[in-house]
Image 1 (tube, rainbow, N blue to C red):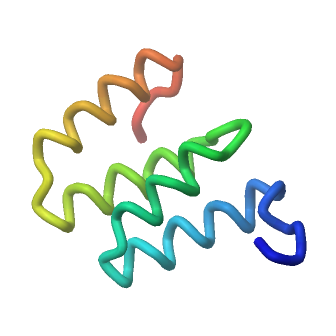
Image 2 (image 1 turned 135 degrees about the vertical axis):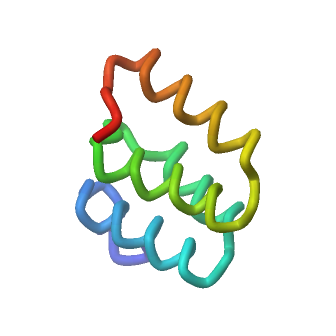
Length: 74
């Protein structure tokens, strides 16, 4: 992010995944919310992070938001 690479969807997706694996949910959510265009990989990562951390209600809210954005889960 310091080098300006955070505008890349690929880099942002990797950061979301990394923070999720470290159980840093808030940091992952911050990156997700800052992205200008969340793709299916972004959504899958953030949903998985919430589920793995036991936030089942958050998972369902994200799935609802995802489908509201016109992205179908796969």
